[in-house]
Image (cartoon, rainbow, N blue to C red):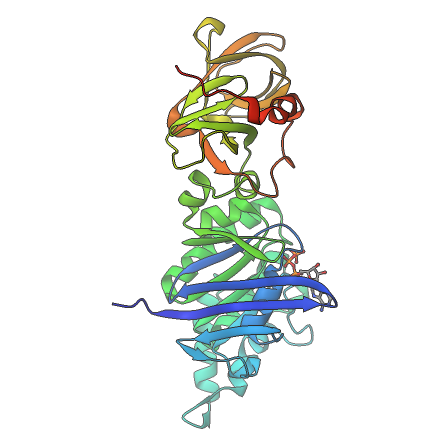
Length: 378
Ligand code: ATP
């Protein structure tokens, strides 16, 4: 059976002046999912959200709602509502009136809602966001977190099918943000409606979402579950943006055989051209520290920082500065060996982001002689 989507973007492009902001974005969003647009500042997340909301028109492409083109539908006729980073509450209205605002314009079967119905809905919404009894409060006197709860209640009161959230927690302090992340996720689960969330915070995206859409420079880099995105990043950009990564230049000698840092490693990747130049991505927590003689390669620790649960070490290996996380302490200056399991070595096709990350100076000589490299036998 064909999957039902609530929102679909088809080949959406947008330019501001001559700058391409969105470059042919296509995406299917399932009803009831928590989907997050994640990417660095300026990558086009908010622009995408505004196009879905109807505040902005795409230059080309279509927005579909349950299969129907809504390109020409004005924002208030779309079954979506938006929450912004700055809560944008009406300062002259109390909490009750803020939440009631959209309800007063709402018509059911052509009739406006009665005050009793509005009052019931406001109460229900206040309970949902944990603000029971706050009806008469002045919004200006609420804390940031409370104001954002009122904004959430106001947006949900009109029962949108899709809630768009544009960095709604960015203005809150870390502790409050973590609490609100859990609460928002619970609200979404309870209501079962679709949340489209925008953030540049990868932890936030990974912990809250069913699906993460990683964007950069107006293009979708990868769509997947948080676990897929973290464990199987599609390119060096995603690998680096989602968590810390060592990104090294390497060469695929053969199927399952990669060469980097002057050694040959078994890996799980295949299908590359012989001697193809690749990006090798290795997470700092996936490296095992062993005595030098047992290591596949070795290097000297040049810094070591205690991070609470683990130590974060910088280890110079062939002039490349590796980041390695361990729970054991090794003093700076220690020579260590490292081992990496085949499934911890992620081989990726070279992307235009290759070389932007990490220290690859030592390897550039080797790259210059790429064509001379002989396939080594074990
Ligand atoms: P941020 O996290 O910083 O909000 P973002 O990924 O949401 O980033 P957008 O707000 O979508 O990015 O902006 C993408 C690019 O488009 C930016 O370079 C921005 O300056 C530009 N831009 C956005 N709106 C306009 C506009 N109305 N006119 C001109 N340029 C714009």
